[in-house]
Image 1 (cartoon, helix red, strand yellow):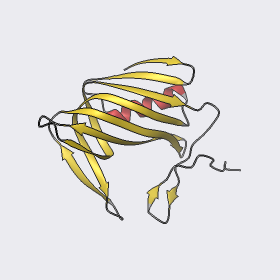
Image 2 (tube, rainbow, N blue to C red; image 1 turned 30 degrees about the vertical axis):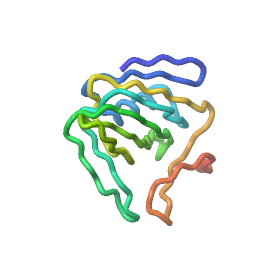
Image 3 (tube, rainbow, N blue to C red; image 1 turned 60 degrees about the horizontal axis):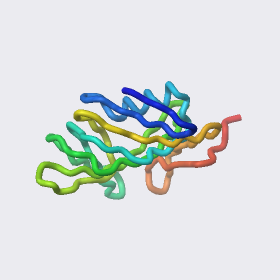
Image 4 (cartoon, one colour; image 1 turned 180 degrees about the vertical axis):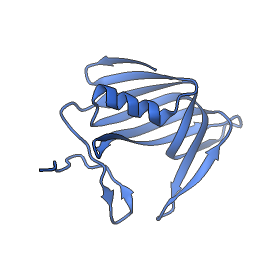
Length: 145
């Protein structure tokens, strides 16, 4: 992976075969990112699994053939001191049809270009929300005493 920073923005290039979540987590850990927004990403996924929230759990949909990444967006927060990556994506397959939703996992195909905005001095949390049973972004988490 290559990365370059200008102010609070980063441009990342992930390479063929990298696990998207592992790479973004490693980036956040290395650079101390505790609050961030994944503004966009383009490239290709070799394989990916999308989830659709049915009200109680994610219904997975696996893509076993490479798809072009049309959109990639998300947030970086902190859970138990470790980076927590939340992503949504839209991809197009060989038939030019779009598939998208909550991204559960993905392997980079050829490359992935990602732009991240960071918020130095801030920590975003992601506590488990009891109402929906999902981890929800908290922009102003209360620090432990």
